[in-house]
Amino acid sequence: MEYVDAVALIKKYDIDFAEGSIVRSVDEALKAAEYPVALKIMSDEISHKSDKGCVKLNVKDEDSLRKAYSEIMSNVGSAKVDGVLVQRMAKPGLELIVGGRRDKQFGPVVLFGLGGIFVEVFKDFSLRVCPIDRNDALEMISEMKAYQLLTGARGTKPVDIEAIVDLLQKASKLLYENKQINEMDLNPVIAYEKGYCAVDVRVLP
Image (tube, rainbow, N blue to C red):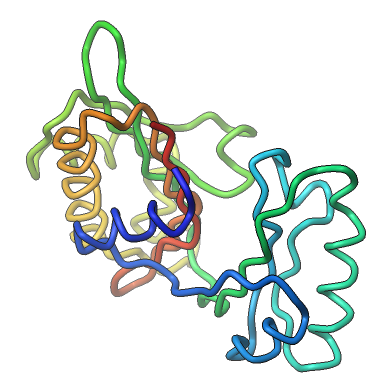
């Protein structure tokens, strides 16, 4: 599913998402930017975009944007590029993943875990068959090995558990109601003391 369609779909379910614009030139990027911004190459042919130099974070002004735009475009190689996403930087917080897939045996399954680069490093996540209720969502959160990070371990600030519970239920409902979806990832979802912000979305039909 195209990025703009995926964003439109999750917004139908009132999932908080960082707004952005897809541009096709540095001049368009300059017009769209509300600093600080992140720049990200939009291409289905490039996986792990951060590792390949196709993402720039915390771009703070016009000169930095021109340089960052040029650098990420020079790293795409022969891949087909659909544009560059210009997205306002979200505040720092705890990075989580909320997603799911359609299992041949169980049907739609929702997933919750540590997000960002930690997904593949720690593989700390929980799963439930959709649809889920509030208690299911709370269990998914408390099952995490990293649960103490969410509740404020070692001087870190606790995240808004109720907001994450609400997000998990919305993601579960989305997967349950949209039979055409095989996979969905919100990664990262940045969790705060109050609320959260999903920064990236991927939906596979």
